[in-house]
Length: 121
Image 1 (tube, rainbow, N blue to C red):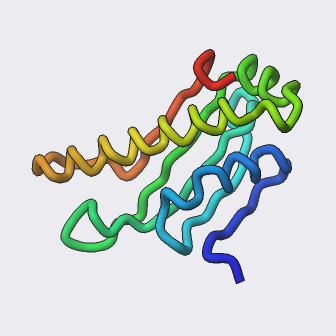
Image 2 (image 1 turned 90 degrees about the horizontal axis):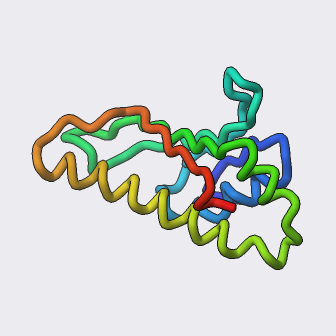
C-alpha cells in the first residue's frame, strides 16, 4: 500500500509528484489539472501539522511555464535530474518559508502557488 495518493493523468506529472512526495506527510494527494490557460498544473493537497494549533489542510499548486514544460518533456529521461533537483529545491524552500512565517506568529496561507519557468528546464 502506498502512503501517498497519485491522481495524475500524465506519467510525467506523476513522476514529478513522486520526486517531491517524501517532502510531505503520508496521505498527501497529488493530482494534475488544467489551468485556465489549459496548461497542466501539479496540485498537492496535504494536512500540515506544524502550521497552527490544529491540523490545517494546505494546497500547493506547482505551475510550470508551458515553454519550460515542453523543454522538460523533450529531454530524455536520463537528463531530467536537474529539473527534479530544481523542483525539489523550490518546493522545500516554499514549505520552509511557510514554516518560518508560522514560527514568527504570522498567518500562513492555506493555498500557495509555485511558478517555475527557465530555472526548471
